[in-house]
Amino acid sequence: MLLAYFSRAGENYHYGGRRRLTIGNTEVVAQTISRLINCDVHRIEAADPYPDGYSATVERNVREQDADARPAVANPLASVERYDTVLLGSPIWNVRAPMIMSTFTESLAVTGKTIHPFTTHAMSGLGTTERDYSASCPGATLREGLAVRGEEAADAGPAVESWLRRIGLLPR
Image 1 (cartoon, rainbow, N blue to C red):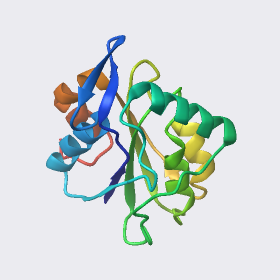
Image 2 (image 1 turned 180 degrees about the vertical axis):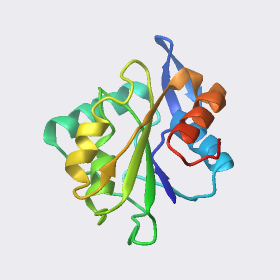
Image 3 (image 1 turned 90 degrees about the vertical axis):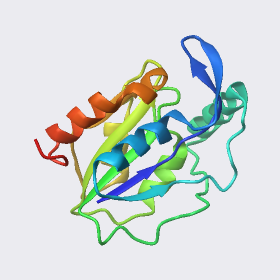
């Protein structure tokens, strides 16, 4: 099993305001998952790191979405061949996963793999991840995802555990 995620620390949205995070919300959820199940973990890193400031990140994200960009991944995986299940984690920015997630998923041969998305968000839940991953992961089976409000990431252990049980990755 592989847990691959993208996360951004720095200035983040927080209940309508801003708060500086030393560890991004998605990474917090990924750490919770990796403590509960046996999996390999891969943190997706941007070749051109996203800005520390919230507004600058929002502006870059809008430009990338409008251009249907594929930002380069600094540490691409050569293959996911040895994995049956892939947990894909990201924040939701402007109702969808950052475009770097499309770069990542499109670079891999995922035919026959089971994919479970998980997201951190302000208001958008899973956003368009199900539609986007269905398009960028041809031949994979997309299964139930998990959406965690970013502000609640540190306290999401019970929700994460419940989700892992529902999807059969944690014994009941």
